[in-house]
Amino acid sequence: MARAPRADPHSPRRRSSRLNNQEIKNNAVVEIQQRSKRGRKPLDASSSLLETTSLCMSEPLDKAYTLSDRPRRSGRITPAELLRRETALERRELECKRRADELDERSLSLTKKEDETAALAAQIAVRESKATLAQLEEHFTCALCYEIMAQPYSLNPGQCGHTFCALCILRHFFSRLHKACGGWHESVDCPMCRSLLVITPDRVPRLDITFPFVPNRTAAAMCESMIEKLSQSSAGSALVVKREESEGNWPGSEWDMEWGRKKGKSKEEEEMEEENVDLAGWREGGNLRADWLKKDREGKKEMLHLLKYWTTMRSQDFVDLKQKFGV
Image (cartoon, rainbow, N blue to C red; front, side, top):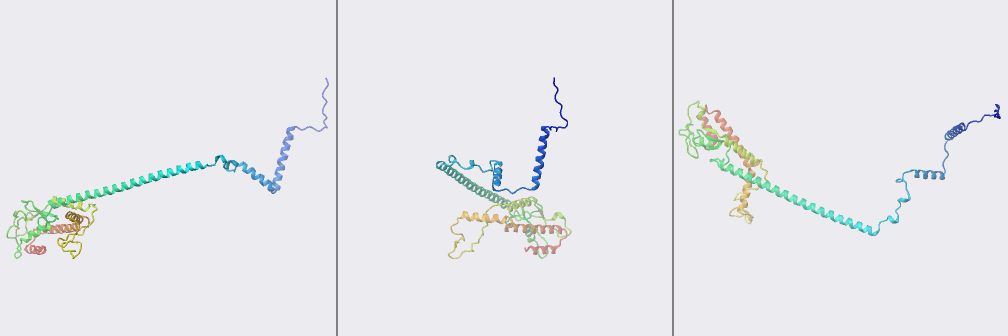
């Protein structure tokens, strides 16, 4: 068998293809780096156009302009379709207008019901105020001044149980005082039933049980609560000026010469106006309420003063009180 020829040691050795490929790649990388260091060459118009085209092609389809964005003839709106859409829009517009009219009608009806409810509430408030005022006038009217009792006091001893205003009963009591001697020579009686009181002793000091008046706390609490209720009433009735018969009776005026009544108004309407005036007078800031509060304060002050100095008061002190009350 023949042997293979031995390789010549002086001949050049063959490199592997693998090493050759790696060397080619390294040379290419070095060449690319050198070109980048030298700087880029300015692009001409053709190269810029190509670059722009490549960028546009690289963008997504929703941003890039394509031929599919142009409306095709098959996708255009036909006159029949346009007419159908306009008819649908008109129909919807009419429906919206009808619903708007219905909402307006409901709003008006709700407003009307609110007004009716407010008027009904005002009528109920007026009725309650009238009922409260009627109870005050029926059960808590002073028999001496014919007004609502202010700081009510009863006589002592209470054989009759009649109650009067503090100032009214004080005036009645001191009206029986003899101004010359400053004493009571006869017993004082009740203004209503003529029940006699114990004669006030002339000697001092007097006993506390001889004080001729007793506060009626039940009547005072009832009057205060009812008057407070009248002051807080929220009736919507307007204030009406109450005229006398002699006011405004000029010839040819709208007021009747004989009765002082405005022409065109019935007797019931005038009575209603007078009731509204009375209710308005008892509300907060009304003249009737202000007069009652003033009378209540003065009566309380005079009664407390008389009770405090009752045991030591002399005849001249009683005479001074008689002059003060003007009786």
